[in-house]
Amino acid sequence: MSHKYDDAGIGSWPWRVISFMLWYAKEFILANLRVTLDVLRPKKSQKMNPAIIAVPAASKNDAEWTMISTLITLTPGTLTLSISREHRILYVHGMFVDSREDLVAEIQEMEDRMLRAMRRVPGDLSRPVQAPVVEPTESDQQGGEVR
Figure 1: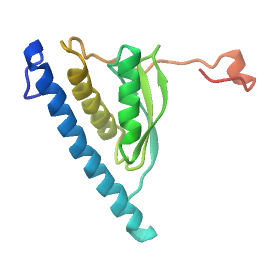
Figure 2: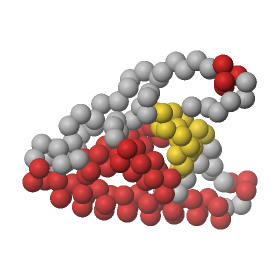
Figure 3: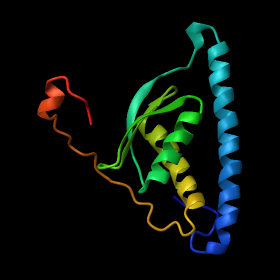
C-alpha cells in the first residue's frame, strides 16, 4: 500500500501523527453518517449486511493492539470482538460488509496509518498471509473458556 508521506525519517513523525488524526476524524464522521442514514431508512431499504471477519494484523506490542482494537470499536459500524496475538489476527464485526476483502482492506489501511503515526520509525508492517489452522482443545469441547 503506497502512502504520500515518507516512512523513513523521524522528522516526518509529527506530520504522520497529525495526518493520521485528520484522516481518522474524516473516517469517523463518514462512518457516523453512514450508520445514521441507514438507521433512519425504512427497514425494507436498509443496507446493513453484518458479518464477522478475521483480519490479519501488523500490530506487535500491547499499545498497538490496544490502539487498533479501540479505534475499530470507536468507529461506528465496526466492533473488535477478539484478538489473537499468537496468530496476529483481529476478529471484527462489521455492520456493512459487502465483501470480506473490502472490510479487511479498510481495517488494514487504518492499522497501517495508525502504526505509521505511533512508531517513530514504522519499520515492518507485514501481516500473516495465511489464516492459521486452529484446532479445538479438549477444554473447548467441554465448554471451557475459548482462547
